[in-house]
Length: 397
Ligand code: ADP
Image 1 (cartoon, rainbow, N blue to C red):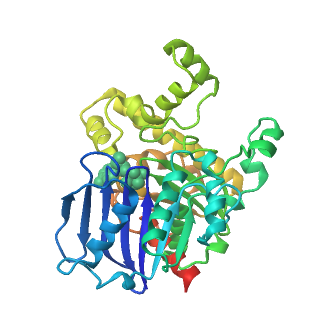
Image 2: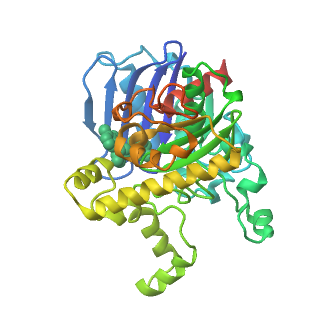
Image 3: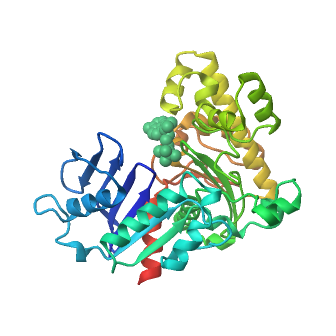
């Protein structure tokens, strides 16, 4: 089957077109500045050059039409016609408590996703726009919704409840949901596969460290706790997001900065994290460079970041009463050996024995710990698009 995987934002649309039999990416790209002046589409076919076309995209339907035109183009297309697109998989950020797994999209599902808009006002409405645009242009092609939150719906109440009046959970569904579920599910599955084990026999801690970052405790194949919360702001220090802080900081800073809670939230989302702490960058390549040049604040930032990662790992060892495998994934987890080194130094008590030489490897599935270590530490590159493709095939075949 040929599956079109769509990740739709309010003004952007990322796509990958995957042959599910070979799991080969036939083409991929990005529509940017949809609805804004200067919109452009990037198209990269598997054996061809990357093309960037600046063209008006007043809305997402036009963007999807352009993607279809690129995929079926006589010269640089990878298929002949629209009928070669067998299914569409959509990444949906928030499924609330309604979705514990992926689903085939119908009118009921669209309505249920709409009801979750409140929980992810920046993301879900945009995801729905993508669904509607595809429905308009490909009414007979089956579509599947794959939720960032679904994998975490197995968390028990003790992991998802916050210490606030229970009525707010009952009335407003305020609870921990967790995100990056597609990645945590995919990476823990691939880790077990690589080790020749059944995920059901393992306690795995997945550290998804990208621009957004979260850690999940996967016990016997199920998410039992995760660091992101009601929103993706909770948990670890991230690229520009603060992660967990004392909630009283919100009103304290609002007073000092003569703004309101929304003004402070903007700072916590966009100007905090390693970017705000280091005054250097949200990009770990820049941070590592600054660290190597002796920048003191970059050093403190990397130490603080790694310390927080190690503390979360420690708490999930407690949550599962043990750990067999620690996995690093996403941009920072796969590439930044310095962070992995700093984190690993806190975990030697577990019997992790990370080999300093192997720890220099990056971007491939590899075991970093010495053979016979009590806890296996490894890198497994994430691939959310492939995970969405697999889910789509599972449901429409
Ligand atoms: P997201 O998908 O959340 O936007 P990614 O998983 O792509 O994020 O991770 C992005 C971050 O990964 C970058 O900001 C950068 O800090 C880090 N990163 C990516 N590639 C490298 C690399 N080669 N070396 C070090 N860090 C990297």
